Every structure is written in C-alpha cells, then in structure tokens.
Image 1 (spheres, rainbow, N blue to C red):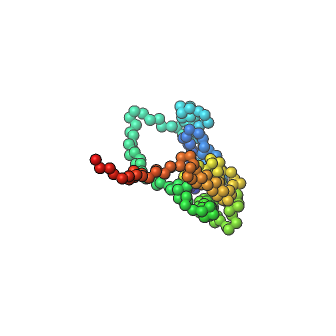
Image 2: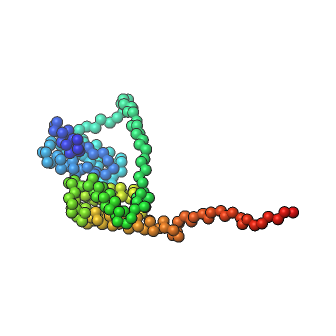
Image 3: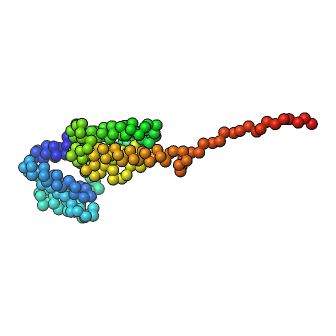
Length: 219
C-alpha cells in the first residue's frame, strides 16, 4: 500500500491530527494534499524548519494542545515495552564483471553492439512503457526516465565501467545512443591502455637461455 492510500484509509476513520516527527518537514506537502483531496477531517502538526529537537517537540505539543489534545507526558512509573532489535539480513555482495574485461577480446563493431544492447536493456527496465525500435535516439526524459531514474541508470552502468564520466546519462536530453558512445569511448581507451608497450602494461618475462655448449677440456 502506498503512502497516500495508507494515509487516506487511516484518516477516513474520523477526525485526527497527523504529527510529523522528522528533522525536516518533508511530508507536510503530500499530507496536506491528501487531506484536501479527500476532504478529510484532519489537521497536520509539524515542526518549523531548522528548529532544534527541543523546540520542535514543544512546537508539536503546543499544536496538539490547541487542537484539543492533551499530551500524556511520561513519568518514571510509566511502563515501557521493550521491543526486539531489528535483525540485519546480510546479503553477500555480488561481484559484477568489468565491461573492459568482459568485452576485451571483441572487435570494435561487436563490442559496440553488445554495449548498445546492455544500455537498451537497462533503460527498458527503468522506462514506464516498452521501448520502440526508434527509441535509441529519443531523449531519456521523453522515454519516462526522471532525474532519479537517470542517476540510478548511471550508477548501474558505472558498476560495469568505473571510468564512465560522472555526468553520463544524467542530462534529460541524453539518448541510448549517447550512452553507448560514451561507454564505447571508455572501453576503447581502456583497451588501448592495455596494449603492448603502453604504461602499466605487463612486460613479458624473457625466457631463460641455456649457456653455450663448447668443447669440454679434460684435465
């Protein structure tokens, strides 16, 4: 159940005061919109932005009091319920193969085709509608990828190609073809850097040679 539906269902039970407890009032706008949209008999209490914890608590208590609610302050004799600590479900990290290693032995055309398929598949997962044949040159924003989607897309691609520029894919006008071009340039540079004689390339070890065999002299 999403936030709006859960809030509307809870407030349909009768008059209520919604108290937002957070460092910043980030939910005040959607809460107010939900209350107004459904005509619910509810009000919102939120702390002023930038207030310290003590001031925020006093502000929330004052708002509740002016709305007809008397806060029940805890006392030393107030019973407390001990809650179990949440368990940490550890999931081992799956190593993602580097594209530079995965596609190192491919020719340039085949490497680019594989990259285009990879980018298209990732964009298709994030897009709200299926991709069409001509969508490789359609801006990601028109394909339905918002700013958050584009940042996640860039992060997923950077897992496979760490040298990918930080701005790659974040521009709304970026296309699948643009991302493919950027990935192709990164991998081409990586392949050139691994060539023989390049900086960082491993030098082959010389094979040991046997000493020359001359005529033996007996003494």
